[in-house]
Length: 373
Image (cartoon, rainbow, N blue to C red; front, side, top):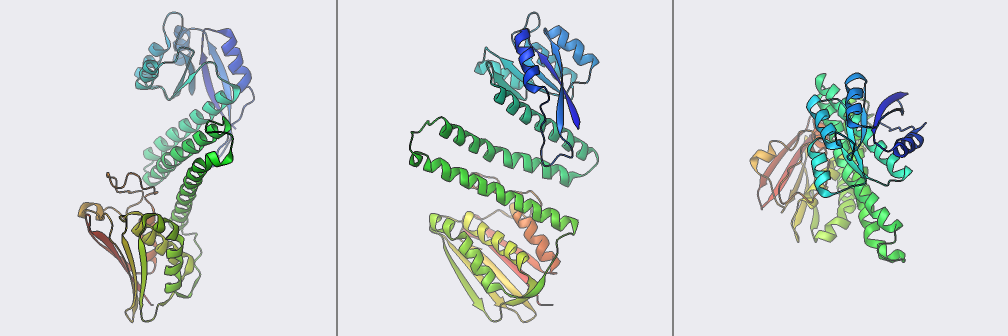
């Protein structure tokens, strides 16, 4: 069991006692941590007293009221920022305002919680700040050890999951408060958006699992003769609902023997990534053509689209881990930045090749060559 030390800075004895009562014996845990966390609470009634404690005792989290006798909370926060203490600060105040929130954030506060707050609100915020502190310290440690890939892993995981979780939480609160009405049909749009967000999180997690299995060498491969025409058709069927929304037409063309000795799951991942990209980055009323061509000693796969295309500079980056092309045309398209990286790693395992030809506003073609032996 790990223990985080919380300094509660508030001039109201009732607030300090209430926070102590709510967090007494409270424990948080996360799947990515080796051990659970409990809390040791320390009180301070003034800013001056808080600074004395910060200078002499190890503190991990500060719950800081802004309106204090003597030094106010912002001054204490500025001192913490100047001293570069390794901790997280959450402001708590009954005098909430946008200016105060901006000042607090500018001075290094992680979060802002207005009074009065419920037990659940406090615990939820403590959950979030504890997770933030853990990830911050872990990424710093991994960077110091030179394990950049793990640092990127945690950074992407925390960033990519935070936005959909916040969105789903917001929709659930709106439903809980019946903000749109009392009929379930009033919330169809929110339910659809929440399900879409959950699907995006599931895809990210699956991408990360695929990557870690490959990097660790623990993925078991089952090689057998499979028909890539069937695999390609399954990938098209999977993307059909989205292609219908964008009015993108997909066509499959075959030439000769389309059987290959391969792992079916790996081939599905390759086709799913390439076909989904061809649809996602396409234009309205666009086309996706999938070609399977027998080249005797190899099988050639070409997936072409009439989409937004890429610059040559972007083409040189797309197979790197966690790389996503960001511009005005891609900002609304979700993804982990791992799909093409995983695809290339899998193709490399077959001693195959993947090449890209792309032109901005014209389209992109991926050409994969897989040896038969």
